[in-house]
Image (cartoon, rainbow, N blue to C red):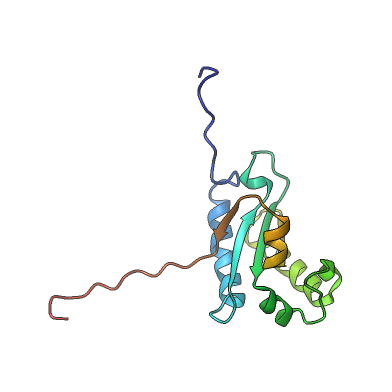
Length: 142
């Protein structure tokens, strides 16, 4: 390899099969929190997308602000102080530990309101935990 050869960026430095286990586990989180009534998504963010020496896997469930307020009514969306909300803390820690147990990865899972995530975190986001449905094949008679 010479100095002019560009280094290829990877989609993630997590590695298989751990990333597959994470995707599988995140499908359950997605089913539990992301429905048609709230625009939401689960994203892998942070250092595991940028470099091979990452410390933990940052997973964010980003909720539309109104959905975040509905799930965490005692938290204040625009203050950023939701980390002191008991429900937010309990769910965040419980899901982080469950994801870690399911995958063997050090997971930092957090709920975030969309306005906060979009305003303060400009880095890459990889969508995760999605389910893809197969297209139904139709016969000639249909």
